[in-house]
Image (cartoon, rainbow, N blue to C red; front, side, top):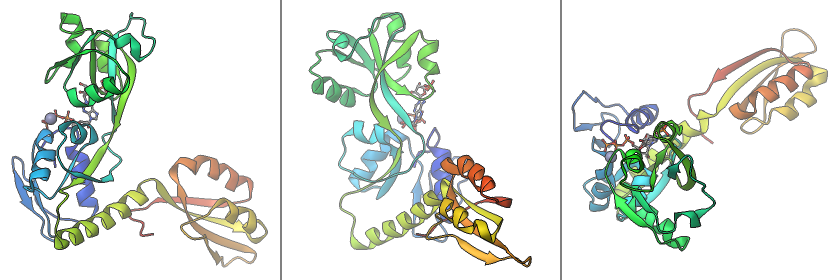
Length: 278
Ligand code: PRT
Ligand code: ZN
């Protein structure tokens, strides 16, 4: 995984949420997990696809942008849902951009020559690619290029350099990659790790919900709460009332709460969930 940078914190968090314990003292380059057959190497993100392709590491966590750009022989095993960003074309904010053909004959500065060149080819655009390794956004203002192709997240870097996002050419997030030639033993360890990752990720956008409702409202309320299989209904000590337990998706949460209240639900409790094994 990345030693220090935008992927590091979430990569470490994911491994820890999978219940894997290891020490990651500052400056350490590798660390052995104490309760799972895993040794972690801390590297620059650019080196991760190459190390995995060469078998120095068996699996790696890296941005999809880097994995695709490096063109190394690795397999994409799983999207991990963090470090989301896009690779976009940025041009002077005053420039009249009217589709990809606007880029014809331009000079574009980028650290992603392979992804950019594939995009230009796909769109039949002849443009120059000026490869630079950092501070790409400054290239137009110093006369180095007409446009840039760089990673965008909030968009504020483009704006502060007088540029606008003209075209998204690639969407990226952190992914788990693997060496294509893993033996049976390592495949089994990877399967165990993926099982844990999916349990953590399934739980991410869900909440556990408990509420009380009069029995006459049960049909209406259970229809709103699908649960993992179906909601749990238990009688309350008070005659004619039940307690309902279920799981809801965070995105639907506020809408469901409103409907539950309308249907007669009371005393609604919402709790975080750590893992879901489906
Ligand atoms: O030192 P090392 O080589 O390991 O790290 P690095 O500096 O090359 O990479 P790092 O840590 O910056 O990014 C690692 C990965 O995070 C990238 O490969 C992407 O997959 C992902 N990621 C997510 C981003 C961003 N968001 C991001 N905003 N990578 C870079 N940026 C930069 C971008 O280059 C630009 O300068 O942030 C700026 C744009 O951000 P906004 O918010 O102003 O649009
Ligand atoms: Zn890097």
